[in-house]
Length: 436
Ligand code: UGA
Image 1 (tube, rainbow, N blue to C red):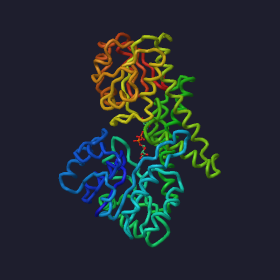
Image 2 (cartoon, rainbow, N blue to C red):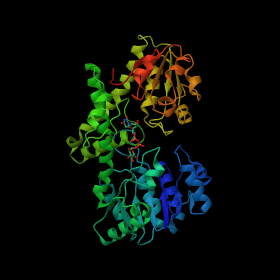
Image 3 (cartoon, helix red, strand yellow):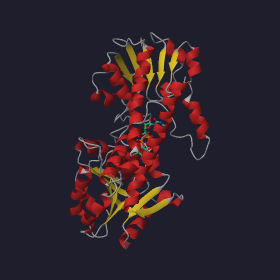
Image 4 (spheres, rainbow, N blue to C red):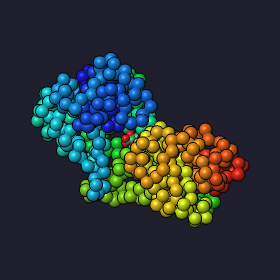
């Protein structure tokens, strides 16, 4: 099938390459010339395991190409819109400028019976607002939220755990959902749940899912705060409650909390939209979820400051991690970098290392020192803090080896990813998040 993908950021670039890899003829379109040039040469503009391979295969096969020219969408019959919906500069709501611009730019090239598939995360009601413009040219607008995780994006796109399609209550809507079943043939052939809803439900599914995940993380971080004043161990608590299938252990990792380009902005946009709808109280708890999350960054900084006897000025602090999570070079709203910046603000000499995110971090926070080599970064440290649980720090760094590099054996485990007894046995002062 001939597809266009408008917006070649995280979502769009992966979607375009993944759709080509399952046999479709795909054109990816973006206004960013540099991004398009990189993609057309088979270079992923961000770190995502597996993406360079499927980009290069797609381009070599002739089934995948990238352009800045919207008129090339005219050949396609299904058009995915995956542009960004960032947080507004002066508020919490989502900025829909790029979604509106993408639809406006696409409209002149749409043919009757074409299908426009919104994938961007949008406030509930957006699809209904856009529908008359798409209807006017005889095309059909549906919404198909994306649930991919960075670091697993290729796998999540080709083998999603569910496909949700919001359609209008018309024959054209039903036809569009049937066509999308064909588009996602690899998943539907494997009996992946294919859930057809109205437009509003599909928009809400996406923000509800992210709100739930954020709430789960803040719940366990709230338990960590209680554990800290009672001497309890939040990781044991998470293991114990996680055995209950109704609760589940995943996303109960207490630590410095969630960041990235999705969870933080999505819960804020959801709360803002609920307020616009006169239902602010229904999701008022999301403000609390946000506050708990941000408090954990303060806590991590306090642990370092306390461990250094409140003498932080000119002390060497090595920060292991910069990305908002492992297997990513994304530093958007990264709790890891935020902790590093705060420590620098207190006068510490902060050295940051990360296997993938250093170039992005350096561009955004030039005031920090960046060292690629982990061991070089640890050299002479007065304190070490793990803020992104890459295997390089979690599995492949032994406390004995680290001890041979540092000046003082102080380790703060901002992700509760180390074995406290092993580090203590090697002479380290170990500080976890909500664990003694
Ligand atoms: C999230 C969702 O998980 C995806 O389903 C969704 O499609 C995506 O947002 C999106 O809206 O595009 P992602 O931003 O890639 O995916 O990151 P997650 O894996 O959800 O992690 C988010 C943050 O939570 C990270 O900073 C991570 O370190 C933190 N986290 C995760 C915890 O602090 N504790 C945990 O137990 C799990």
